[in-house]
Image (tube, rainbow, N blue to C red):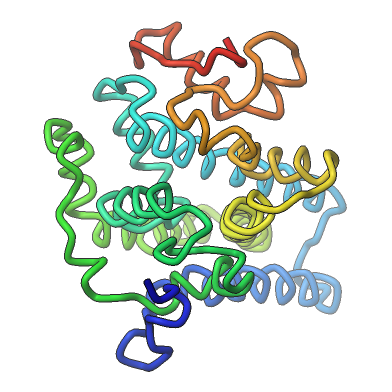
Length: 296
């Protein structure tokens, strides 16, 4: 089998503009917005730039990372590997967070990930870091094989109407979340005489947080997760990915709602995607959680 990084031609025909925008264009806009507002706030006396805007921006960035992971965790562990069952409210929240995270269609996400597990680290793996680290990071989402995109939704997802409906209207929901809602917020703030500077800083921080989470996932898991890395790096990447970066056990025991032992405060912090699922279980939003024996 020809490695995917070689089999897919790097041409304009296979180039995916939406993926490029998600990986690089949107993050660049967020950084540009933040930088521009800060410079203008310093340079122009008419604009107010308080010192506390910056710790607030850090907090909003962290919250954005968390919310994106709150979508990817249930997607990966429950919808992909069937380590439990989400009810309608949990499905809705998961899908909404996935739209914020700009993860693309669940249909394609699950199909790519199934292929990854079938051919892990061998030719046929969509993002094999041993072929090319750059390909495993972003190459595989920038250049696509049309046949991959034409695969139907996984059979086990068809009986989940919230998932199916929101996935069908993913593009429309993305426009609402990333364009319409911010525009309405800016308009309201302007109309009531609020701070557009603060609004722009918060908006930019959300975009930057999503970008950090996005690249922590595609690089921290697809590349570093398949290589030998220091423990501190594993924990850093785990904080940025909700515990998804704890990858050494995953291919041996993929069907697990937790990626770290259930007990221990640090385990529940660093594997907060698993903690979210435990919380969902407590309030009845998820049932039949399956946990690998080493983490039970």
